[in-house]
Length: 333
Image 1: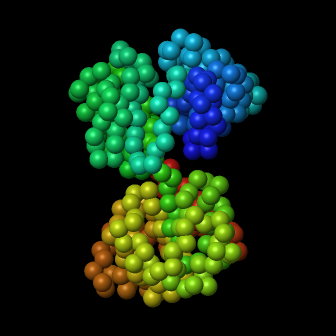
Image 2: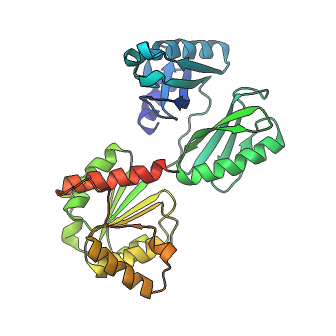
Image 3: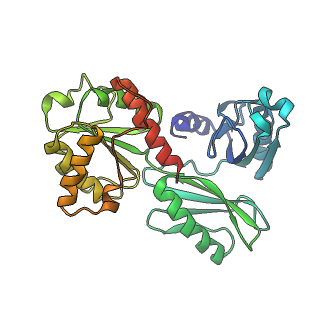
């Protein structure tokens, strides 16, 4: 959504109305994931996508209708096998898309989640906003429902996840969507792999941070695409900065640099910790950390050797394997 904010703000500044369509459920093969969005203005402009196929036209029309009526709608698209390829939904996939007039445009400088009723007896489109500290604004129409959804939303928010939740016994389905600053990829060691990682991670929407206490390794020219360059020892730079939106990769092969970074990361709620090195190097690393008092459960959080085993050799290939492993961790939530 971040990439569309400027365009949508321009539409609103011109006095145009805006509707938003959000993918809330997919079954089978789908070219767009849950949370994918398409925005439509009353002037006929459009950004984003919910399918990449022919349902875009139907969704565009539903958005125009939502702007006229002010009413939200849940659209269901099921695709027969013989039509699958023309629409991009192989194997008879289905997509549910929730269409609504755009309310407040969310500029999420801090993590928050929205819970929206999309099915059931409650008012369709009723919304509850949940902050990271558990405080709420709005209501889904029932205090007990609000409380049940708040607990689920807090867990999804911690991981930056979004999904539809069916509340058994209530006959209500709620789409919970997480917003917030982009996830951070923290690289310890401004080595060649970090150069490739900063380039690729930007495409995936990460805020990239490179930490190294060696001036020549945090060179702005080499790492010009990094969002932050920090010239400091990693334990000093990372203490208190890692949360569940943090993904830490340790790249130097030097225990004097790697181990302090791992100590901080293991004591943090970081969602991913990976360390470069062979199986032998990693075994020695674990021995050192175990001797410092870290438990086997702590050490199991370290992905080492880092990355998915795809036979990567070049810095660019290793960067692909690391990001693939991080995506695997993200999608497992």
